[in-house]
Amino acid sequence: MNREQRWDPERYAKQAGFVADLGQPVLELLAPRPGERILDLGCGDGALTEKLVAGGCQVVAVDASAEQVAAARARGLDAHVADGHALGFDSEFDAVFSNAALHWMKRPRDVIAGVRRALRPGGRFVAEFGGHGCVAAIQTALLRALSDRGVDGQAHHPWYFPTDDDYRSELEAEGLKVETIALIPRPTALPTCMRDWLEIFAGPFMAELPDGERPGFLAEVCEMLRPALCDSHGRWTADYVRLRFAARVP
Image 1 (cartoon, one colour):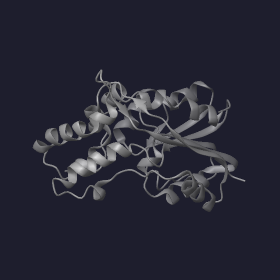
Image 2 (cartoon, rainbow, N blue to C red):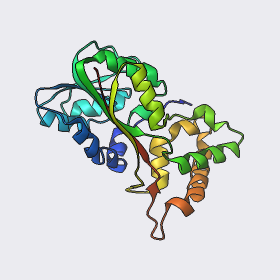
Image 3 (tube, one colour):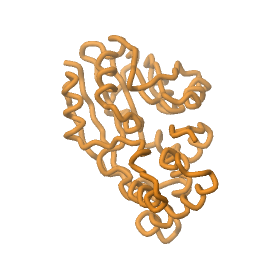
């Protein structure tokens, strides 16, 4: 089975549209100006990219998922498949923007080095992604259910959730000046149920499970999480913590 995260843009738009909907604060931190050239790193289906373009910015969007890039192109956006660890731009952008994507890139120094190269003098790097403590309960349940099946869940763990101090150090090591950085607890109501969330975002944890074992595994994880993350009306919440920052090329 493929260990990589896979994306279904149509399902993502229906069941995970909150990701872009909750991106307004980081857009405000970016404060884009008409005419600026901006790189959207990890653009997904382009929902936020579209807002930048509507504001008069010249935006290049990149994502590792060919399916998501196709969805972004269907919006008329300048979108390309690219690995965030190996960006090939050189002094081209006034800003690099990213929402809910950097936690999928587990080699932060490579990512930040590519961002630094892509920025013009005075350019800024503004982003929000999962920070230390993000989906801690969900991770614990996934790892426990895998351990009960004799699977090393850490070997398939797809996320990077740093502290603000750790990420500040990574940014400064690549010569960026950090203007603001903070961890922000943000419990997030899910539009459907925890099982849908797991199927969309936690695919890599299930890489070693035969297809026939997935339904039982998902049901078990949901039952473990129900007391903490589901209320008496059956409404689920994900225990998100976000790391939001703005940094600049001196």
